[in-house]
Amino acid sequence: MEPFQYVHARSVGEAVGLLARHPGAEVIAGATDLTTLMRDGIRRPSHLIDVNGLALDEISALPDGGLRIGALCRNATDDQRIVRGFPALVEALRSGASPQIRNRATFGGNLLQRVRCPYYRQPEFACNRRDPGSGCAALDGDSSRHAILGTSGSCIAVHPSDCAVALQALDAEVVVRGPRGERRIPIDAFHRLPGRTPEREVMLRDDEIILAVELPGRASSAHSHYVKFRERASYAFALASAAVAVEVRGGTVRSARIALGGVAPKPWRARAAEHALLGRPFGKDAIDAAARAATKGAAPRPDNTYKVSLAQAVVQRALTELGGAR
Image (tube, rainbow, N blue to C red; front, top):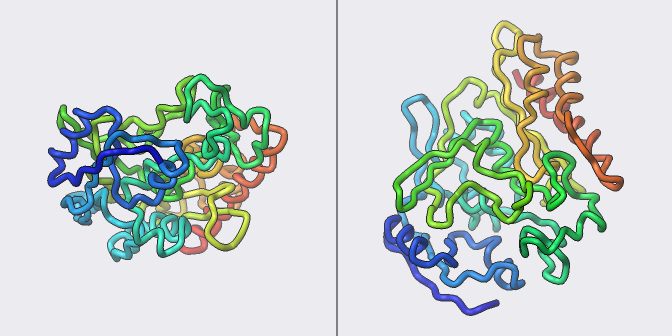
């Protein structure tokens, strides 16, 4: 671990100012990911800005019936407004990590966690995310757990967050603040695909911090579900996961959002699967069509072709279980 300066911010404004003055600074809150990366020499911040204690840990109602969840709210939250109105989010949080980790991890930090690619996490391997221009060892190595959608010649790692997949299906917005003021970033746009610059993982600027996540109040949000396939029954990162939010009126699908995890460098919006559901009776035929469409455009590597059928299966299960809950 490299030396760094520790500063406890007393306000959001002070935290933003510190980030603006020190380009190598990073924010620390739950510290469930960042400290590991620092210990292993992957992240080397010049300053750690501690934002614990700021008034960013509240959950409040929005005028449209939605919720605003502060960036410092812990992932172990059992707020009944989330349980009733956004069940997919609760299911994703509970599947993501042990209670001990969830009691420390924050909503803001969850969105910013780094990929779990072993080549990124071990400095002796080439990794364009860690060292831009060095290459991607996964391209010629073991890619069995890597992405089949949204990849590039620079990176094929998958995004690790369960929470972010659910937020994608719930059409969340991320509220951030920087020296230029406050802005909102749709969850669709918050995480970036790798392209030629995989080191630029999110749309958050270096001098901005996350204030909150806002969930719009919609009928489909209360009728949502999250399913995760992993290698073992205990806590593990997803090989494939799906969050679905569907509004059904008169037996017909009126709106749908479907997001995939474990198969792309960002939470993946499966728009073709959504279109396969719209305007159809919410039954087996529509669900099967949506599952097949979920992996449209997939480009698997020889050792992760299984993820195509796995992703289709997780979408099928999520929609089938959601249909049975109506």
